[in-house]
Length: 332
Image (tube, helix red, strand yellow):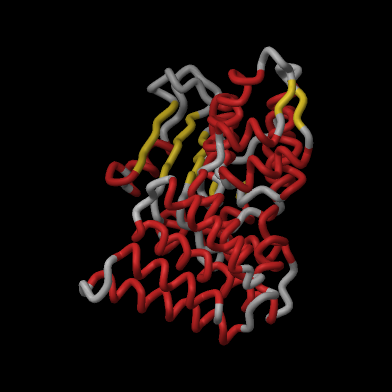
């Protein structure tokens, strides 16, 4: 189910009050899962009414108690609502629940909120047939743009599309993290009424990771002068050598995955989803990939592993190993 469809579906059911008896919420974007599941539950239940609303999660979930709660008539209310969190039933299946859904009374609503969902399970297909499934995955570029811009618009603060892209590049697509950074920017820029890329970089961007990314750009172009300049900048930040090695290795691992996806014919959207990177950064990674063949990327990762081994075995000091690695990567 498309992201926008999931939102629209829940909103429409709330507006029209056409509720189903069973719901399944899930997906990678936990902020939206939480936001829309709460929105539905607060509409269909009084969460303070312990006679007609209950929540079960983790070890407290028992099949017989689910069946008992839902089979009991509501007490001076229209319905009984049961919220079930992380049951695991949609990963491994649960025959008893699958059978019970066919007999679920009209006076009961079950809302499953799950981390692990396998669409091949019979239970998933049963809920798809009888109820509503709302899956919220990593938002696409347009949705994030509209959402972030809307948060600033409420306070009459202007921000350009390019500045929002810079914010997401630095912070990532986790919506809870983005909310925290947006609040920080609002407080800082409330008086002047506008937010610039420099504001984002000053308040929100991880300086070390940003410079490592810039250094990777220079490395992919085999530009020794720029590469060593960014490396010197990183040294000034006093970042531990092992941390730099980890970040460099991670970047090459991402490049390898992007390269493989490109050679498989994937487009930007599919690459972002498969590699788990923000859609806005895909173009930059693709540009960096152009500087390497698949064999070269594998060789670069091997070099990173060798540097790690030299440090851990005491064959070379960590700072020296990382500096030698960068020089070797420039000639790869």
